[in-house]
Image 1 (cartoon, each protein chain N blue to C red):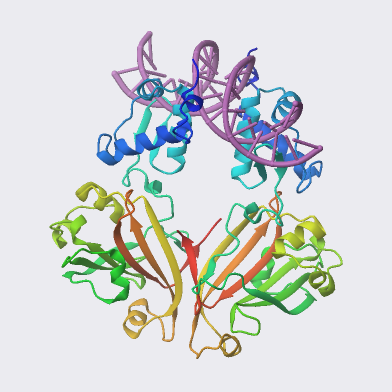
Image 2: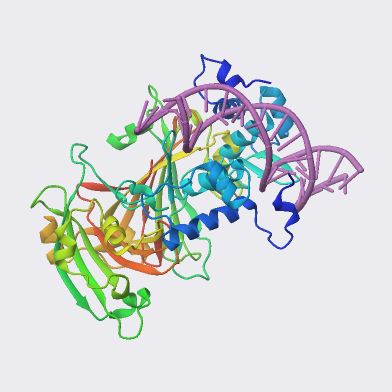
Amino acid sequence: MPSLYYSDAVCSKPLFEQVKEKIIDQIRKGVWQANAMLPNELALADMYSVSQGTVRRALQALVQEGILVRHQGRGTFVASFRRNVSNVKTRINWFESDDVTLKVGQSKIVSFEKIAPLGKVLQRVGTQQGERVFHIRRETSWAPNGEVVCFDDIYLPERFYPGLTLEKLTSSDYPIIYAFYQEVYGVTVTHMQDVARAVLLNLEQAQKAGVQTPFPGIMIQRTSHNSYGEIVELRFLLNVTENQSMILSR
Amino acid sequence: MPSLYYSDAVCSKPLFEQVKEKIIDQIRKGVWQANAMLPNELALADMYSVSQGTVRRALQALVQEGILVRHQGRGTFVASFRRNVSNVKTRINWFESDDVTLKVGQSKIVSFEKIAPLGKVLQRVGTQQGERVFHIRRETSWAPNGEVVCFDDIYLPERFYPGLTLEKLTSSDYPIIYAFYQEVYGVTVTHMQDVARAVLLNLEQAQKAGVQTPFPGIMIQRTSHNSYGEIVELRFLLNVTENQSMILSR
DNA sequence: GAGTGGTCTAGACCACGGA
DNA sequence: CCGTGGTCTAGACCACTCT
């Protein structure tokens, strides 16, 4: 059987790329939701009229992009934040405690409000006419009531999270906030852009962090996108590198 | 022809992994040096008694790791720093000018000395009995004689760079210092570990950077390894995020 | 045992680059 | 023109997981 790749003069893209896009489309449409199992390789090959090898290549690429997860003997699944934190192409957390015995930091919501987006930076979220944004402020520390190591300001455009309340946020326990977006609002972050700058802590921050001013920190501005490229989260993470450090590569 | 993969009970590793390691060995031994062209796929398949597809898979993995470069119609080549800056798995430069018209920063060597390694941090380089290290201090700015945006302290164990002098360093023009290591001393950095912390600039640094104290910066400690895992470079990069920012992902 | 993904082969045709 | 890598197919066997 001759390959479609050559006969189809109109479509310049390789077949496995086309298969990739078709699979992504199914996920975007919600035909295959988070944690759902996909048909097996031969079934997919039949669906898209390509060979098993071509399907395999498309699937492997999607695994590498963090969109799918495969288990030998079990099947191919749509990745979810709850079961697979490395869903996103880029890293979610850059910081690690210097003390190896401390593993996960405690995150606490200290403020929640619905506001009109202000300032040049907030215009990044591309809100529509009159749309508001939710502003969540969190503080992270390694131990309960310990020194704060991360000040986290999250801005969420209302249209992606209709009816969001503090109760919804705190009612359930989510390993990371991206699992909340995904499971409660069907918002899957597929890509994020992180830009960092050095800053000085203000007095309140220094006090909460248990350090003397002047004290430096690393401010990360994060812009999170869904698979359509829309901005679904704008976030400012101010990290104090007092008992933690930023792991860029290892 | 049955595959060796199943019949060879001793070796549990997949064939393409074994081929990968054999190719890396040839590069380490210097049989194939930087920029050298490898035999074509069928020749390699014959050499290692595997199919063309298996060789292809090994080669593609090595391309992804930045060890090889392939060009359709030309051949497969050993990656070099001069021609291919993305040789290393991890990123070499995290910073970008905020001003898009400025592209590449000017780097200037301000001090060069051979010293006995001191301090806890320098013990990281794992020097041998009585061995010394070269200490190179560089300063980077976007414009000639402009404000310094990066203070760069490089420590090189003597045994990897015998007879290194300031003249050798400045005699030729290298796009990045890793090309110098590779071309002059045959030291190829294959992996680097970067850890960042926020710091305060001292008075001298603030003056050179053209800012008022207190001023924060991002200090990156870099440990660079060759393919045997030996530490061939220890580096401290203090970056001022005044006219530049740290791009973590895009 | 049935079904899944993981590895491997042999062979085909196409696209690109340089002599 | 020839040699290179890039894509694709059809089919084989193995290893893993669950029932």
